[in-house]
Image 1 (spheres, one colour):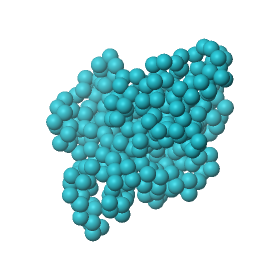
Image 2: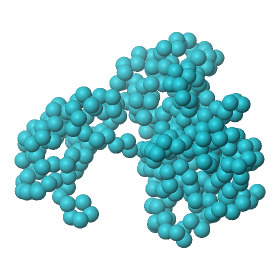
Image 3: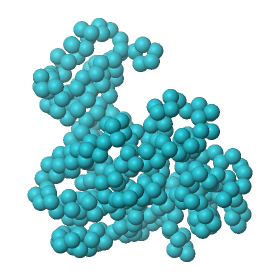
Length: 369
């Protein structure tokens, strides 16, 4: 597109377009661009009657590159394979990352910018408070955040799954979302719900959390273990699709949990499946991920740093045969050797702005406390 490619954007939010025939759409495109490939951006495609068969037809007969977006309530990833029959590549679009917010706010991320620690830390504090939903970030508006969440709760979940007692679902959702970045079990969520006078069986608790996961409201992180059966039986950790969602459930802001949530989302953006790890001595480390080459990376979010976090992260790295470990801090930077294993301390803002898979550049110096 940057080199002058042909492109059209069509939103099926427009009622007059919702029953448009695929052949007529192709004719309209060719009236605008008589020849050559055309990039078609089709938004809210779930509103287009018979969208799946029409997309298959456009894919098969036209010289069109199709980019399709729509509501998660109607375009869930589990349904797309059967509807499009192998004619697609799925791309998860999350709210803006800190890197995207910083690039827009600071006009680029040149090397000189990385020395402006004060400005970046201030921007990071705002990002953890307001998140990356475009309108919420732009206006710093709690009302827009509430409106967005209500749409996800009612349209993407309650209406789609025909939940009868919406009040009970909302009570469970509040408890689950406020437990973000903490280990939970289906039974612990049920007990918490019972504590506020609401009875719900474990199977329904599981279903409601799964509905939230399918709507991309939360992610569910399992325990990192060599046995999937053990991972399934172990507590889970829930992470929010955007750190700002936590603002609706916590006062004051829990900076540590918001930071952990931001790191989880960034690992997902970089193509990993983050899981938490428990050492043989019972110490929990925030994240362990498999790199493409097969080795494991270990990360701990500890904004104040500290010897305890360095030791348990190194312990986890040794057990998983990782060559080094990373502790993500607020501003502490450097390296330490813990029983022969390198522990890298990296500021959160730098790690989020880096393009390296799991670590940020540390500068190679001893960690300054």
